[in-house]
Amino acid sequence: MLTKTKIYLSSPHMGGTEQKFVNEAFETNWIAPLGPNVNGFEDDIKRALGGNHEVAVLSSGTASIHLALEIIGVSQGDEVLCQSFTFSASANPILYLGGTPVFIDSERDTWNMSPELLEIAILDRIEKYKKPKAIIAVHLYGMPYKANEINAIAEKYGIPVVEDSAEALGSKYKGKACGALSDFGILSFNGNKIITTSGGGALITKTKGLKDKAVFLSTQARDDAPHYQHSQVGYNYRMSNVLAGIGRGQMEVLDARVAARRANYEFYKAHLAQLDTIEFLEEPTGSLSNRWISCVKTDSFETREKIRMALFEDDIESRPLWKPMHQQPVFKDCLHFTDGTSEDLFEKGLCLPSGSNLTETDLQRIVTIILNTPNS
Ligand SMILES: *Cc1c(COP(=O)(O)O)cnc(C)c1O
Image 1 (cartoon, rainbow, N blue to C red):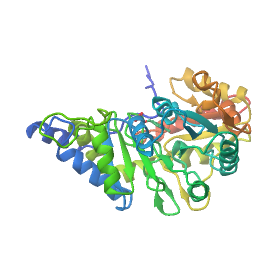
Image 2: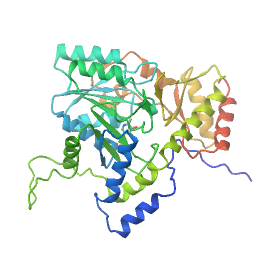
Image 3: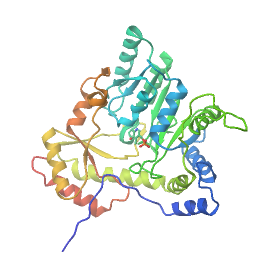
Image 4: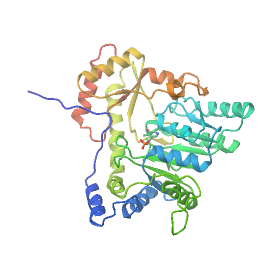
């Protein structure tokens, strides 16, 4: 009997040398949130981002956003402008600090923060309350947001930008690496991301001073004294040297992972673009997406659900696009500047299996099901 294996949306894909770095950690007894793998992983990321930024590896992408906002000085009563079309981890840290999220809708070209709505929101908040404390923009699914336009607006009003690049390691915008385009960048190495340490993240800063500040806060804000002395609240957010070993191995295959995910997208496009019920998101000129997830927008909620259920019946995981934050119960009272774009994407969009470990047979199995789904 033929048995089909389950196809996941995005599963970890080891390169082969990860265990060597992990074993080194054991052999040298660096089983701690510091050590050679932590330093080596930070150097590898720094190089991948072009060499001009500083990197602090932390316990998660969420922790990295939390520390970026903490360093910016977000506190009780501050508003932070955040892309609505994203994963909840982009916005949750605003609440950890007592701040208030204000959500901004996406534009059609990139599915990311609309520069127009961003400026409308800034002007509204300045007039009715006070200047927002920070902007969180997201390169969703690996597609770069319009960083030049977002940065220009941010600079015009003097508001720092946190670049949520959790899904976009390996993506490029006008030749520059995503994660290193704004005041602060963050990466995630969660199990579903393009490379993984099982769990982990990084905060990217423009100066060594800011990196040192992040490391200080992530290791319980310990003052320079022989005893344990603390003058401010700290966090336990540093990455383990064992997990950083996985990261070092994964960095060796990052380029191959980007190429494989981009090839998935090309395969889907080549086989499905003829359907008039399905649309793909093209890269704007100057943008290179790592295609972390290959997404499609269908013509209706019904088409989307038919495809999703047909895949599910064959043990293939697919998922609706992110539900916008302004529609989430937990953020129901938050202000939002929206025009229906992300609501439409949530209603009709689907994430297709996108792992770098998918085989041609897997991809063929997926497109065959979609092509055979009635009305699609
Ligand atoms: C995964 C993700 C995060 C959070 O990263 P973790 O490492 O899981 O904490 C933040 N933002 C976006 C857009 C993500 O996809």
